[in-house]
Length: 325
Ligand code: ADP
Ligand code: DP6
Ligand code: CO
Image 1 (tube, rainbow, N blue to C red):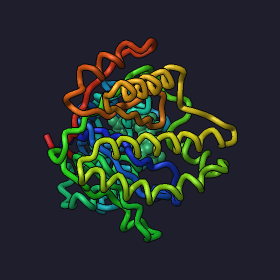
Image 2: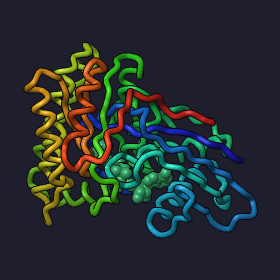
Image 3: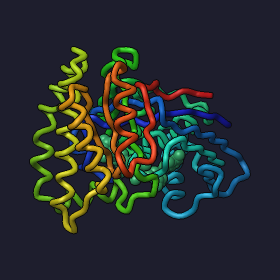
């Protein structure tokens, strides 16, 4: 009853930002991401008969409190699914990604946990079922089951039975690269979960943001099919700015940006002005991800490293979906 799985993080090009059902994690809109090979989580799960509760080690430290309960509540779903209500587990997870800093550790973390836990219990689940289960750990995680470009279909059903990810194009469809510009690996003050809830509940900009999604999605999917980098980059960047704009209207207002976040955004625009196609996107955190093409790797990397306040630039290619070790 032991298994180990590896899952990569993903960067949303069309953002998931808001839930219509918080306990089932059903989103307000479809979202679309690129799975990244540079950041991942490896998780081992071992169910053992004599355990009285779950144990969770993250990066070799015992985890208690909210982060622990998020994992045990998720394992409860797996226990329900397998009709083994009293079987507890030792979970040992290593994040090759900063935790809770806007690098989508919840995506690689819950995708690896779901895959390892179902495998440990020998449950035969399709990738679609695995994506549906994973969604209930962290929404963005349902996209990390698949590699390449991935869409999370929000679904129409109230029970979430049609809310899961699908692959739009595999990793080898197109060699688009992503530079993760690290300014801070500190845990953010407002988690993704709390940030999106506050925005849905209080921001007057929220409904306008949601209204723009279907058109952004149509356009970006066309851009991916055509390998039209300018189109994909332009839509991803504006979608990101619209999402972050909603947080400024929340009550109390907040932003994930730091001053270096803005400096990097300006630098990306300068790169474009000098003829290098590069576009930014930002998840719920201060760090920036920059999309670029292979031929511009050196210029993009060197330019971003020189921005004052930038501590690291980590390069990623399009990554694969969940694997078992
Ligand atoms: P991020 O930008 O890193 O996704 P979130 O606020 O969405 O930030 O989620 C961070 C939370 O995800 C952590 O506080 C923890 O509860 C959970 N998490 C991160 N990594 C793991 C992991 N490897 N296994 C289980 N849960 C994890
Ligand atoms: C800005 O998936 O981390 O990165 O579902 O509450 O766990 P929960 O939130 P999470 O939110 C991600 C928000 C985002 C956009 C995205 O990844 O689509
Ligand atoms: Co997250």
